[in-house]
Image (cartoon, rainbow, N blue to C red):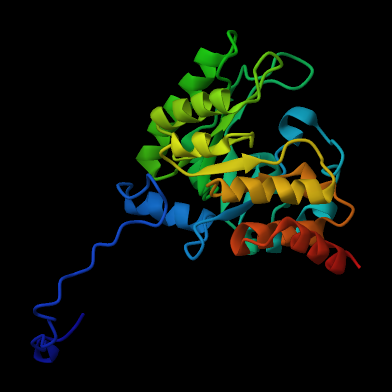
Length: 290
């Protein structure tokens, strides 16, 4: 405790200088609580407003698919190059070093695999997400699927309620069924539904007319990498999305299934944070690979 005889009168009050009340750097996030903003600023680089998320949650529905058979061998060497890690809680607890100091976007719904009907899921107990110090919770939303649309939107809605109580943002992940068109109209609808139901981030797919998808979504959008593409094509995908207004990428297979995963994630980072052109990033990839 300070002694009373050391209590000095303040002298520097800055009279005439108004306190700055600058808005937050991410769209749709200015009115969030401090804890929410703190977590969002871990995921998205405050200098660029962008994020390179490394997704390796595939095993929760696909098992040991190519590239994630051994997380310790394939993924851990890439962590230093990512802004955020997206994974399931079992892998996080068993294999990801707490000393990596990377924000976690926690896969927060589960209940089905590729062997059955997908998206019949329940959501994680938010207290477990808090115990894991998650910076965000990712929940699948299956807009347009008659069997699971209501359930998955309800999951998102409930996750947002729980996240608000603990200051944890929620990322709505738009699922694409076999009968759904991969176009701006569908992705615009799905993204907006996620945001309207409280998602703080939306993960969706790039398509022609993506500018409209971004424009109608009031929160940051990150794009999914999807299936493995040739490296130059994946870099072009990332570049087009960023130039169309995306706030980042959440790539998995296009990184860990690459011939040189460490080189690829660094090249993706240059596209996202430095606006590097795809051809230049591909050269960077080849230089690092060599």
